[in-house]
Image 1 (cartoon, one colour):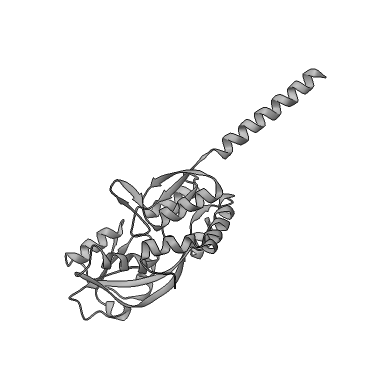
Image 2 (spheres, rainbow, N blue to C red):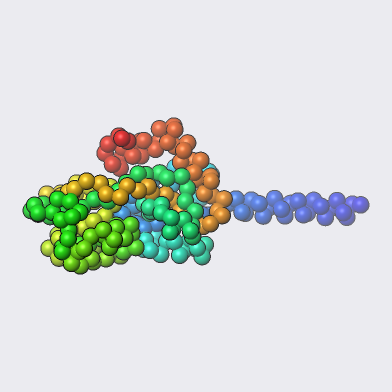
Length: 247
């Protein structure tokens, strides 16, 4: 009887130990760190709206994490192979992606905007891009949109949006089509005085944090996002990074 009790106590102890190990697992967070103001590198440190929001979520759900920078179009494959536990990258929630990954509650509403040289006056909307050379980021909603909606002369795709901005600055393309908060941020910071945002908002869309299918973290993250929106912390982060109150 004593041996049986000793065995049961040993099993219980090992079970508790394994549970503790499981709970102490460091979450690997994949991120595309070239998407201002959502995530980017500044003074050797990763910063941005997504970075701050995830940090707040991690504190809410009680997990430790490590950021894993990678190209945007490598994030979903990394989720599918479970090399990362979550992807934060201003990722648009769309049906094709939902077939292979699970998204938490949408945390940002955006759309697409056109960025042109400040000296450019002939491009005012999407129709004006017909026959023009346009740049955007590879593997994004903006690339799909331009291919489907506009008969451009040439669509140049860059692994990082900075490449598209540089091409516009040097006169290699007539316009950049990309996510509204990103082009607006660029126009107000590094591109101030040399580029401008034109036209209405196209293709309204929502961003979501992506998880491997069936991940238990997804529901916890969704609850945390809703809580942060309710208690005002989300609004503070929004104001910090976008310079205005939530509309």
